[in-house]
Amino acid sequence: MRTEGAGAGGHDLRHHGDAEVRDDGSALVDLAVNVRADTPPAWLREVIARSLDSLASYPDGRAARAAVAARHGLPVERVLLTAGAAEAFVLLARALKVRRPVVVHPQFTEPEAALRDAGHTVDRVLLREEDGFRLDPSLVPEDADLVVIGNPTNPTSVLHPAAAVAGLARPGRVLVVDEAFMDAVPGEREALAGRTDVPGLVVLRSLTKTWGLAGLRIGYVLASPEVIAELERAQPLWPVSTPALAAARACVSPRGLAEAEAAARRGAAERAHLVAALSAFAGHGLRVVEPPEGPFVLIRVPGATAIRHRLRTLGYAVRRGDTFPGLDGDHLRLAVRDPATVTAFTEALRTALPAPPR
Image (cartoon, rainbow, N blue to C red; front, side):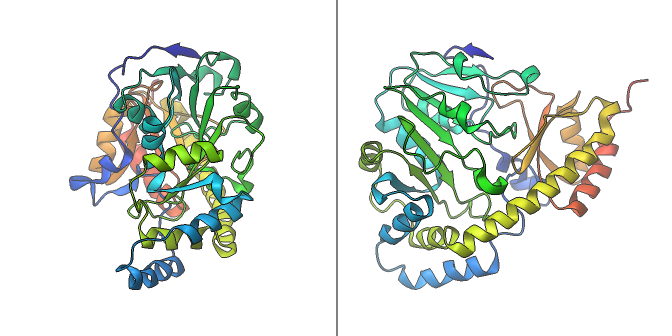
């Protein structure tokens, strides 16, 4: 692990997986976006549809906020609903007065982009591939007063131990943990959501990944009442729409939580199938970052850029890795899909890969 200074380093922090499937990529099989396929389910669509009868009224988030608070065993003063986790990153960057923010990479790039847009100078801690992109809390600068880390981390799919992440907490430091994919981990092991014993802890959650609600924009922040109040003051009025509020209540209901857990267990089996299929290409120099714990896997393969372009001609979109600080042009991220899709994809990959070295 090493610390990198404030420069952006030439990385396109605003590039996201959806760019791979827009415009001429819209007909491709999507392994670039980490949203669960075949979502939202019919029952959730019906909940959202019923909420449309209330569109003439301004959104009232009290019931949804209370439902999220109850789901995590917290008072409502510790919950803020947001238009997706992306809004939360912007609020944190604009509302909090910090001197030395540090972002632990490789990870989702929007937190750093939001901090830079708000005028902050951002330092990076780059986790090393040879260490499996694992976290060593002692290597984060002691004077960092804002630390951002994902868990499980996008794009590495590493699930850090909760104790290691909590070990980043310090008096006078805000510790932001992006748990957007934690509900895709069976049992949500290593989660910090709901903890009140970690000083300065801010946990972000998204309901768009597991439930296929990226177009609806719904997420939330869990933090101390003081931090929540600061973020709320920076929010515009009525930031979350009525349909999104209805979806939030449904997703954290007993039915929603049970379905999410079932989806997480199914996704773990599908991920194992994907990793096993990829192991057949070890002779081509392809390596999976293991053990993956999110609904996606990170691979390293020589010539990944050319391979990604060849896959597009074969009908498949995958996520380039070189826009993530700490990764390079030999990295690709693959979303976990059902076994039939994976089987078809691996046949395309076999065609796209150059001949293995002799």
